[in-house]
Image (cartoon, rainbow, N blue to C red):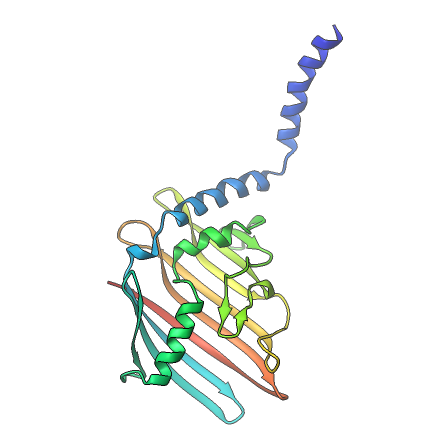
Length: 231
């Protein structure tokens, strides 16, 4: 009799535990897994685009504007122009170093990012958001190293044809940090916007980034505006 009573009790207990589990956790797994699956199915070799970056550097007595056009053909990068002119040897050297150190940008990168998402919430506009407390290693690199561990992220979720996707990813500094022995970063924020392409798959449409820091007691910063044009 005791065995029979326990057999009846255990399914009931399991049902109660599932009902008591946080609903957000259940939605998080479903939402996160759906986005990761779509991101993994996106191959950067299947896209060709031009990336136009407008960078403005600020500092004591300094304000420099540089417009750079780069091209990804599905296999390799090429530097098209710098400020409307043919790139110099110095420009090409910097370009090759940067593209070798960083992965090709695109929605496929969401597979790595979303694997680190740990919470789902609803923002003031009624949109679901996923929080990434610490970005995975290799997510954001500079010419001096990997700064991912100093950053956190928040993804705004939208829907297309009934499937969820990341419409906006906001990355910001969790703390002050050093790029090298000289530069201390006091603020970093990057926003990436994604939109469905003709095939319905999300594409990286634009990015903006703002950073502030100091070196030798002098403060400065840089603002970047990036636009992607697919071919």
